[in-house]
Length: 133
Image 1 (cartoon, rainbow, N blue to C red):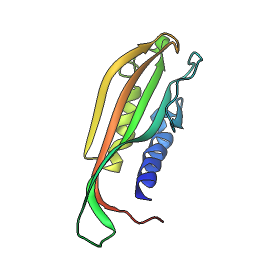
Image 2 (image 1 turned 30 degrees about the vertical axis):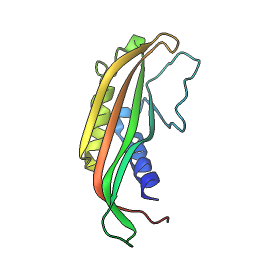
Image 3 (image 1 turned 180 degrees about the vertical axis):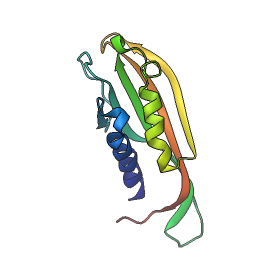
Image 4 (image 1 turned 90 degrees about the vertical axis):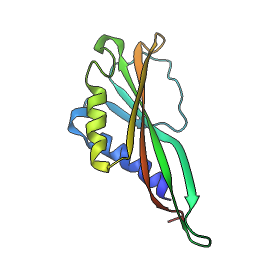
């Protein structure tokens, strides 16, 4: 289905981006906290939100938006994801996918992980095929 494919494209774009080669990039299904201190930047990719409207009765397509959620965790020793450049690299990796919007959230500190976290949402607007492959 198109939603899984789009999430996989975002995941592949991040994994293939040269600026993120020292980061661990994983799919987060479901998002779960890990009880260990981070040694490297970790980026998780998961479906976020979707809103679809039928374009015509009886057709297998809909116009709408689909967002992929990205969480960037950096060890506190490296500074926040904005400070160490991880968010810049994430945005640079996503731009070739032509998203309609990229939102970057605030930062949270997690002492149990020894990390800073920032949420990013990349939104795509398009005519989506709703048929299963």
